[in-house]
Image 1 (cartoon, one colour):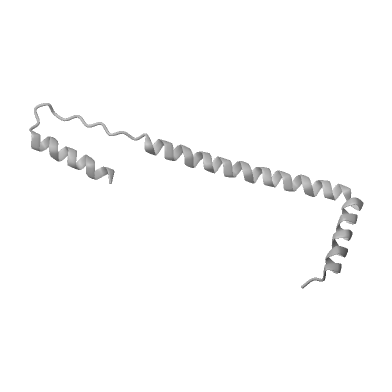
Image 2: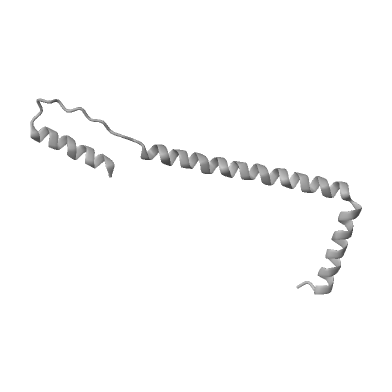
Length: 87
């Protein structure tokens, strides 16, 4: 376990070094910002693609043309097969 005085010393030294090495500090902040932005865009793209896939999956329709001369038993069996495909 780190002593509070040691932690305070390290914080003071870290802040002091940020001022001494300002160019590296700016470069580090810039590179972290770019990485976080790219990661955010990738996550947003993934969410958008998943949303579009779900939307398209809900828009599926099935159209069945039954011969007008078909008897009721044939029409009933076609209806049962359609119902079985939904599950």
